[in-house]
Amino acid sequence: MADVVSSEAERRIVVAVDESEESIYALRWCLRNLPRPVSGDASESRDTFILVYARPTPPVYSAMDGTGYFFAQEVTANMDKYSRDLADAVMEKAKNICKEYANITVEAKICAGDARDVICQMVDKLGADLLVLGSHGYGFIKRALLGSVSDHCARNAKCPVLIVKR
Image (tube, rainbow, N blue to C red; front, side):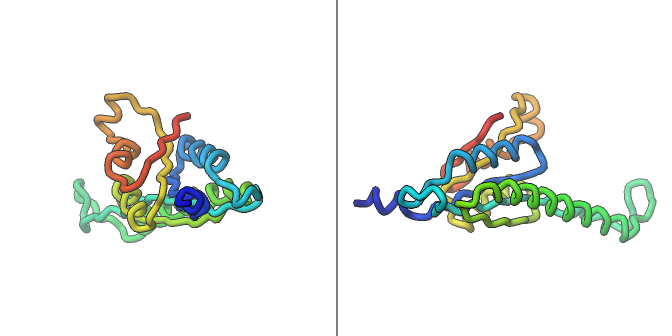
């Protein structure tokens, strides 16, 4: 009896998106392979896909940079605006991809901070049943130098993690 109840329960699937092709590939793969139909009706699903974009926090600058020049407030404002516009564009692209799948519910969350921490915090906060991430496929050296969001999330997320490779 428990299997019947759990198979019909809503799943909350968090999909981390960014501006990379790997992220979009993972989203498309997820949408093609994960939604479950409700009682055999393919036009409906109890799955909610939550798109999470981690926007870098705006840098904090002192009044003078290292060369002695003053930063104009408009320069930092423009940098922040670019970051917000990029987040909106990525999220709009992801939502448009999701529109092809009318049988799912989609939510979007844009958060500021380090992607590794933001994604793990959102998984916990949203009570996710699954986290889906794309993999850039970095080799050992790049992964050691740059760090890997997918590796960090696989170790620290409080739910199962699916890493989709291209």
